[in-house]
Structures are given as structure tokens and as C-alpha cells.
Length: 129
Image (cartoon, rainbow, N blue to C red; front, side, top):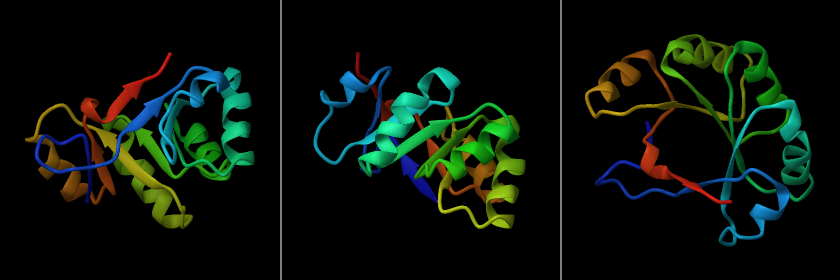
């Protein structure tokens, strides 16, 4: 299991951007965090064109499928979608890893039992504006 933002496991940060200009403010070789939205397609296309790794936060199965097709390195889903998203990712052999937001260490066991690729604590996300 991958851990991002856990208090005693060192991990990379994800830089949450709201426009293309904000990408310039991130450190070199950063992984960019973007919420899937049609209005963010310009950002997503920029990331693809420049071969920048990115996380897409999705809200449903359709967006999950788009995230894979768009080349996301990680796909962030909420817990209610976790089991289904992981099963689909394994069935379709996604290159992306499924990450689930957790707020408490007690949730790690549940995600492990579901076979989720990784957990994401809020501390892993740095907002860039």
C-alpha cells in the first residue's frame, strides 16, 4: 500500500493547482493534483503535453474511466467509490494507482482489506494559487 501524507512515512507532496500558471510555482518534478472537471481540461492537456505526472480527483465511475484514458498517474476517489474503483482499475489494467482519502489511521486497515493501492491524508496536498 502507498502512503501519502502519513505522519511518520515520508512521501511526496501533491500540488493542487487551479490554473496552468500555478504549475510554474511548483517545485521541479512535482506531481500535480487536479480535480476532474471539464473546465480543467486545459490544465490536464497541458500536463499530458509536458509529460508531468498528475493526480486526478474523480467523483464517479465515468470520471474514473476518463482519468485513466487521460493518463493520470494516480486517481483519487472517496471511500464510497473505493472498492468499485479498485476493481475496475484491476479489470482494465489501469496504469494509474487508486488513492483513497483517509482522515484517521484506523481507516487504513479497511482500505488494505479492500485491496486499495494507496491512502491519501490531507497533509499530502499543498494548494498553489
